[in-house]
Image 1: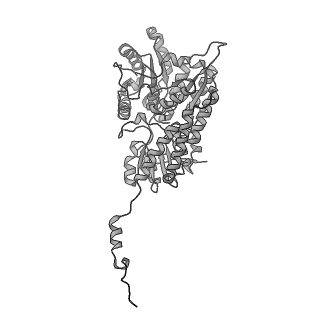
Image 2: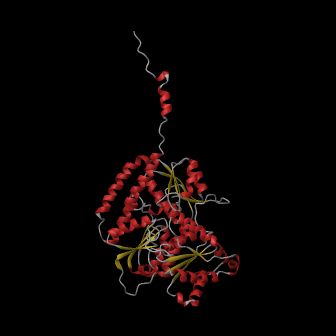
Image 3: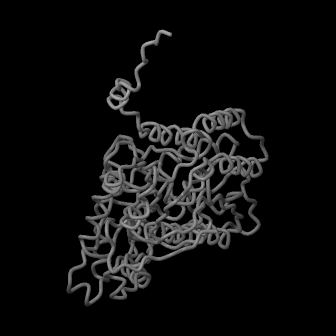
Length: 457
């Protein structure tokens, strides 16, 4: 069991952590025709907008209440009210998610109370769903904000089933954690549908941030799960929660609707993919399709091919807790040693990470602990540390702004794990130090290395 340590440095150097409002905004982008609204200064929203645009390389819907110094001191109700009215008038969203920031949390703005007052003053907005979320950016991290937002969406938008209603065993809810890419969600949807189940993903960023070109421009999200689909989640037969961060949302959904849930903390690796398949087989009552039996065989073969390059390698990982466990556990399965593990926030899963110690810290801490490592795994902000250390960097997580295709990276299931073995295995192969040809030639030409002439007797 890993020991959890929190950094006590006076300041953060090269941050690994991203704030709660950014995680909340990403979760809201998984709702169809949604406008995320950050209740704070313009700078808070501008920073998040730039980060998401650089990562996804797509237009990002994100608005702000534009709090000034005076509004911050006196209270932000008028800013929230005006922002909601303007957004509804101009963009016609189905749902607006309002997230607090550090400045409005410190002031103590009562966002829930503001929403109630807006409802009373503007009955014409009754058709628009409003979801307030408390996401102070002075504590917690990206994963916490994402999880809190999904929980609030469940509490506000999911309808309790009618008394005596029979759940639809063919439908399954999937609560997708922040560490899943649009590509991961697409892969999981294919797997679930192969078992004859109809999944509803919450949130579903595969529809809104998967890099497609929409037929028409829309200022809100142009894909994702609709408000009506979220409302109907109470009629499903089961819920699959992907990542410990989704536990609270799954509990909230079960409490409100009675839908039972299964939580999977890992889905990369042979054993983890086996557990996913076994869970879906149990829920659906169907055997694992031959397609995935074939993919499992391919994964086993890839593991055999790759274990020569993974075995004995020291790896340093900097990631959010659920991603740290998922990838760190898989690397340990492949024979690597996770010799350095740094994360951004606390979580119950950190104790399960296969390493001696997990540090809640920054990328400077990761760099110092990774001096003898063979591979660095983190997002794009780790590229300078990898260069200084002289080790390869495998980019995972958000932001990934110096490579193409971040949204389509797939690491789940048999196929995702197989491709991840090839990607990282090729990094190890490329970093193998070839012998110095010039030194070998000079050594072979030395007099003591040449064949002496035969001596006549």
